[in-house]
Length: 455
Ligand code: FCB
Image (cartoon, rainbow, N blue to C red):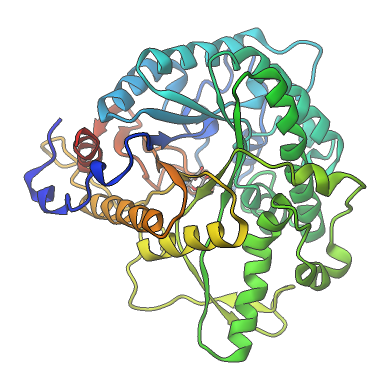
């Protein structure tokens, strides 16, 4: 694999700028790539149901086939190996393990699939990083109230127990949850993600149960897996006020409270932030004795997914935070409209490290979507993604120079895939997927990453 000549100048960042033991990877998730929705005993997930509801997914698609990774995983692992990464982050589909959410016995075919996949990674020198929950709750549990119900925490623990017993001899890195903000608030407050509920109080209760399940899973995984490293992945944003007015500054603090501190404070032993609890009033979740101590169980690492910064202005009367996100002008944006700010990543990592000292930090996702085109000669010249990637690696290096114990970087994503409510419109991959033929083609960014990793 050689990088196109036009990108040679962007190689201002080198692998040797990072420590030799730095983890280099790429990320995916089960529902976004696997397909095989009705095979080998897999049960229905909330995303199957959500996609089947008219009007929910922009292009009317679903994850029934997606990238057909369930059948093509050897080719995908070969591609990851070819990139030169030494780690691969994937997620396990709960409905493949317990099709009804709970059960006396896990589904052997589901466990076998992940067992083969993990063996395939190890054979290729890829360290497996497994996420236990990347949003695909079994629909049967949703029918009984889903994450709003405390019982779902117990179901999650039983699922985690089965998976970690089965794979724990080979998988040592476990992420309990991916972005509880999205599962809780996009799924239950904004309603634009599965299960499509719009109820702020419910979302806050869901969020509490997600965090509780993380804390309670921790000792269980440690018991089942010798030498396990266990953490959680949060989607975090650096937040700044639109102006230096006292009102905007205070609004930014309120927004940061719901967006970042609401997760970080309880995870790092401070309980839910008092200012946010006060704003929430009656919406605040029910918290039982011992919950906060469980959530604060010290984890081995923190996973950070970084995509964009947020600028916030005071907005009296708007939501509980009385604030609004301001679209700053004259900034570079991805095709999704997300502001591109490598500097924001440095600021965020530095802040998290200084305010919470979580110990080892991994960037478990970072990536971008552009209007990629497959050219007649069969190449995809995604110069913007190359630039994005190179600059964010520079920002990672800067954060480390500030003293942040950053230990690894996982690019989102290996492949173009099903981007939730946006369907297949948004391409985030280092490899282009032709959904009609399932052919994978490494984009210029994939070549660039491979070249970077080669040194
Ligand atoms: C993150 C999700 C991931 C993917 C990227 C673009 O919020 O964790 O599944 O959709 O955004």
